[in-house]
Amino acid sequence: MLLTREEMTFDFQGGTLDPVRDRELLEWMLNQFLYGEMTGIQVGHWLYEHAPDYEAAKFLARQSLEEMQHVDNFLRIMAMIGARPKPAHGAVRFLATGMMVGSWAVHVSLEMAAGEGFVLMAFYAVIDTIDHKPSVDILRRAVKQEERHVEFGEEQTMKSIEGKPWLRRRLLGLNLVSMWGVRRLARFMQKRLPADHPLLKHLPAFLELTIRCNETRLLRMGMVDRPIRELSGARRAALVTEAYAGKALGGLVSLVTLPFRVLPPFRAWFGKKRLTETYLSDPKIIGFALPPGEPPADALADAE
Ligand SMILES: [Fe+2]
Ligand SMILES: [Fe+2]
Image (cartoon, rainbow, N blue to C red):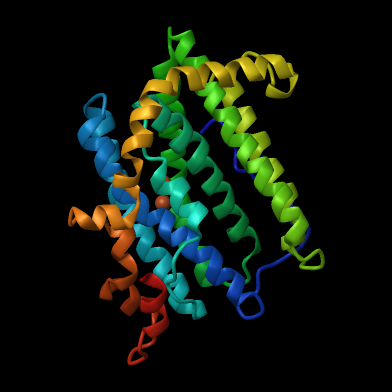
């Protein structure tokens, strides 16, 4: 990886996540992670449609298995702390599923290097703060695999922009937009988070670090020749415009077909439901996390 564990580590100044005190918060967080891992089924799309060579195909085949194992990991943690599988937040669902469009270059740079890089930092943060050793042990094993996914994203991004300055500028523009989104999220959270929680009060600063790390990664991948913050506002605007101009035609097609690919009612008409829509009624999922004999009524109700 182009960044070290130290560079991607945030100092929560002793703040911890307590499995009893923070059970509700942990349940919410774990459900976002669970959904994220379930979207590992999308690796199949990239393997079948886009893998550029045999090595990449082997990597993707292995990655899909690892993401499914991560689903098991989160179910195991949820069972231990008494959390139930529930639907992920709509924004997370849209970001992880609705955005599954675009080229191989967009996938490896935005979803793998940047996106999984962001998730990796969230995993590091949980490892560093959760006061529950069995969960830490499980997550420590999973992050080794996530690190490889990020590294693959970095390598493939560097390969795909080689000798293609137009693609480099386009990916940079898209990255600027996604970082703008994370900043908006940080500002939104700043206003709503309890200022006295030992861990949550650090969340906006943590999100700022994730943006800094992404900027460093962009620099080290050769996506930009100077730190992002040294780019003028006009230069950034030009990059974003170029990225979206290039996307315009593909974007139009995507926009028209998006509801059919993403929204459950449309997909249901065609009798197509993916695991990311049905996993909360899968007995293997709800049965895993609940104590035996307990009816999974609320989990099922939420899933509908
Ligand atoms: Fe994963
Ligand atoms: Fe991953």
